[in-house]
Image 1 (spheres, rainbow over the protein chains, first blue to last red):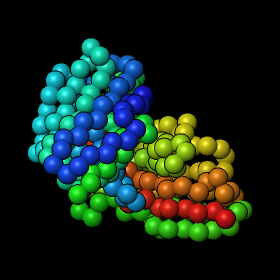
Image 2: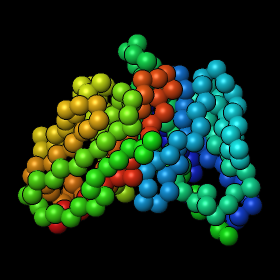
Image 3: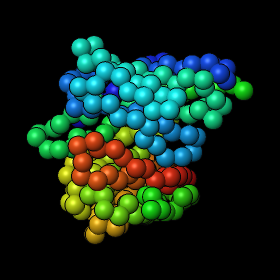
Length: 115
Length: 114
C-alpha cells in the first residue's frame, strides 16, 4: 500500500472562494479516493477517480488525476463555511493480485472557510 | 442502514487497565479496518480483516494490542495493559468486497489513558 501526501497542510479562504488541494503519490495506482473529516467525526468518502480517468465531477467537487505526474487535485468551488474540514487522499494499488488494497492516509489538508 | 457503529464513544481509564473497543460494521461488508488517529502520527492503519480473518496486522504497535472478529457483525480492539501514549481516537471502518474499496467510517472511540 502507499499513502498520498496532501498539500498544502493548511488552507484558509473566504466563503465563496474556490479551494484547491493537491495529492502526490509514489507508485502506480488503480484508483484514488478523496475523503473529508469534520472535527471530531469519522472520515467520509467524497469521490473516487480511476486511473484511466482524468477528471471527475460531483456537485461542487472537481477531481483531476495526472498519472504521469503521480498527482491529483481536489477543487471545491464556491466554498461554504460548512466545507471547513480536513481532506485526505488515498491512492489505491492492486496489491498482490487481490481486488483490494489497503487504504492509508497522509496528514491531510486542513481547510478553513471563513464566513 | 445505521452505518458503522462504534462503542464506547469516549473512554477514560488509568494506566495499566484493560481497554476494549467495539465495532459493528455495515451488514454485508466483507472488510473491516481499525485505524488510530493522533495529532502527531495522523491516521494509522492498525489491522484489517477480510471475511472475519485478519489479513494484515503489521500496523499493530505492539503485543499489548489485539484485535478479533468472531463473526461478520462484530469486532473488538483490545489494549492490555493500556499506557498514556495509547491515548488517541480509534476508528473502525468497513467496506464491501469491491474494486473501489470505498471505506465507511464509524464516529470513532476517543480513548484517554491517564
